[in-house]
Image (cartoon, rainbow, N blue to C red; front, side, top):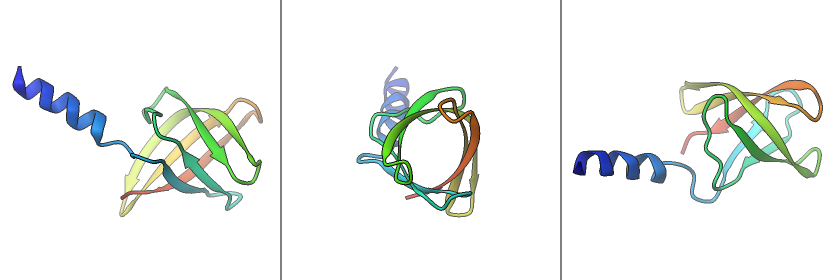
Length: 90
């Protein structure tokens, strides 16, 4: 039981505390995934897109860890496009 509680706490606390910064690989725009978004495949999350100057809802399609970063492929239903973000892995 205690092990399960520790596992749940570690999962909850391992996410970014203030936001997760990255870059759109195609446009070079700064992207921020705000606190409170659970970044998992199939989940809808809210991002801040500096190029659009607004918040957008996207669906996470794929997550890949490489080197010191994380690549996230999302579907942006507003634009109808798939986008790839390179996120910092702190």
